[in-house]
Image 1 (cartoon, rainbow, N blue to C red):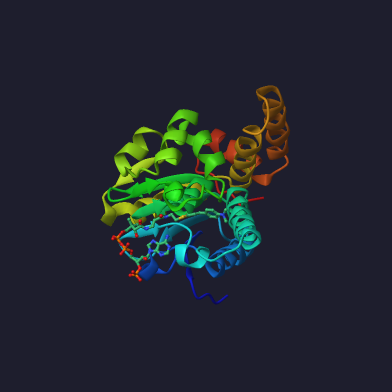
Image 2: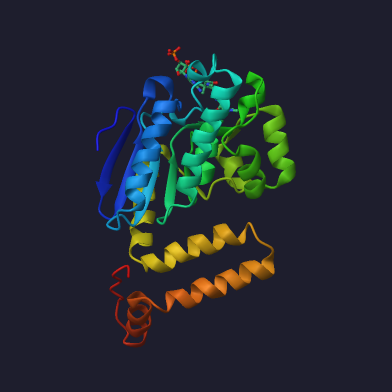
Length: 260
Ligand code: DAK
């Protein structure tokens, strides 16, 4: 696979996707979104990949938003198409069979914050900055920020961030639950890879089912969410990994999961 705006590398069982437009602070234009769509389609059907890490090239930005120079002259129909493309890519990431870790190494604004929120786990560097500044441009978040931000940080804080367009630093993002952990910039990628390695050592089918249970469950009332959890819990007993995991525990040895 060859790309112009992203890099794809392997690190053991992890795939590392880097958005690579550092001169534009990795802003998302349609070509970049299309490449992300393509790479995540490929990764989703590659069972040699257990975990994905997504980050931005350079030391300044994860993604500084949707590309303003690309969007400026869009008409209403084209803008709708652009929003639908971004939403489709981010939904693909959110529903990818494998977990996705965002390693947020700088600005995560607008579409960049929305991309991070579509990932399963967010790790940030101390210099990361978050915000939904769309109202300063006369638009509103268009890649599901109005939906994912309140689900992560609550309605009041989400509305404040969206209505003011204010930026918050990594520690504030941690305090409100927008990121899981904060690291010195030089340690961020190593921390993301270490987390990826830990996740990859567990039962991959179980993780895939757990991801589905959390994601689907949040869209249901709790009784239906629990019923769904029971279904996928039952399904996990149809895997070799379940037998291996429980046998290994009882035999006091390390489990050797096969992802099936
Ligand atoms: N788009 C395009 N270029 C960008 C960019 C962006 N979002 N952010 C930065 N750049 C470019 C700058 O124009 C500059 O380019 P040159 O002038 O060197 O050619 C280069 O990156 C370096 O940026 P700065 O010189 O500005 O760097 P500073 O350190 O001074 O400032 C900054 C960094 C991140 C604070 C600043 O660049 C900034 O405020 N950037 C814009 C952040 C922003 O507003 N992001 C949100 C974008 S809006 C929708 C679909 C999607 C969306 C909405 C609706 N529908 C279709 C309905 C989503 C919208 C967004 O994400």
